[in-house]
Structure formats: C-alpha cells, structure tokens
Image (cartoon, rainbow, N blue to C red; front, side, top):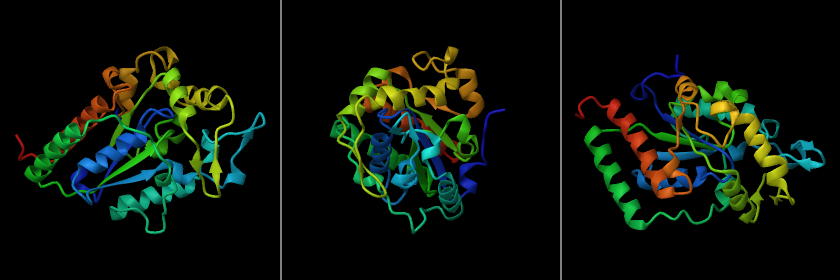
Length: 259
C-alpha cells in the first residue's frame, strides 16, 4: 500500500517534502512556490538547518562529509516537524541559516511567475483553502534511512538532475553559511562525496538501481513519491508548473465543491 496520511483538511498544516540531489533546484523551487502563494500561507523548513555543529560533522577519508545522514541532527528535525504538525507554524526558536545562502538565478520569467500567482490565487479563493503549507526542502528526505520522516509528508516531490549538471552547479557555488562559520567544498568534493552519497541513498528509487535511468514508477507509487518529469530537468519554469499542478490537485481533492 502507498504511504499515506489523513486528508489535509483535517490537519493544521499540509507538509510538502521536496527532495533530490544537491543542486537539483529544491531551494529555488521552494522559494518560488512560497512567492506565488498568498502571503502567510506558505513557509519553508530547510533540512540544511539541522546539521550538527561544524566540529561534529563526520570525517571520511580525510574529508568532512556534509552530505550523509550522520551529519544531521535528526532528533531536532523530528521535534520541529512534530511542532509544525501540531501548530501549523515553525518553532519560534528556529532561526534559519540556510536563508543566508544564495541559490543563484532561477531563470523563470516574471510573466510566468505572475501567471502562476494569479492561477493559485483564484484556486485558493474558490476553494476557501486556509490550511498553511509547510515546504520541507532537503537532500535526504526520501531515503530509506529516513523512512519514518518520509512518511510524515502529505505530498512528496522528487527532483532530479544529471551528474554533470549537479557537478557544474555545485562547483559554481561560493560556499555555505554553517552553525559556526562558513563551508567551502574542497577540490573533487562532488566526485568523492556528494554524488556517491546521492547514488547510495536514492538508487532504490530507480530502474535497475541506476540514478541516470527512469524512476521506478511502481516503487515510487508505493512510497508516495511524485517524480519530476524529464522535461522539467534543468528547466525551472517547467518544474514550477509541474509542482503547482501537483498542489492544485491536492487543494481540489480537499475541496469537493470545486468541479
């Protein structure tokens, strides 16, 4: 049976998980969705805000590994998600470090954003939708090692990108604000750490356990994951349209008065 949760309208919040490899557009998509929905209806929780302290990040083969499950404070993440599920808002004590990191240009034309905003506004008004939507953005949300957290989400969107694109985008970044300072990827970090970890944690979702092949539709259905269509890869405009359509379906299904 597919992983599922009670209907969204019976809860104080809709939890939307957006996951995928590093540099696949997770944070960019999350911020765009927040911007096109009515103010105060959508907020973001970043998995990157739940790293351990810099000194606690595990070292593997002489390199700190920020892209493994052992680098995360999963206890604090679970507590934050539970608070959100109960109260419909972020814990007041949570201050985001991730919001200080840039994500680069999204490439979506302003007219497309305006059209999406108008479409969402009309749908929300027609349906009377008032449930807050919490977007959780993170690179490991759908891994088997975090299956208990994966089950918490009402909607699970999985982004994908190729090795070459992930490497190019990741290596173009200047670095990351951390709990205690600033992190810059050392040389060959994508090849030695980022991509191998992604393959290990997500190959179960793909045909033949090969992350460059198609997603395994049967398995994704079983775990309730919606996979990004191929035409949305490296095209944030298409990715945004796809994500909005998925949320529209949720809102319409929760609002039987919409024909």
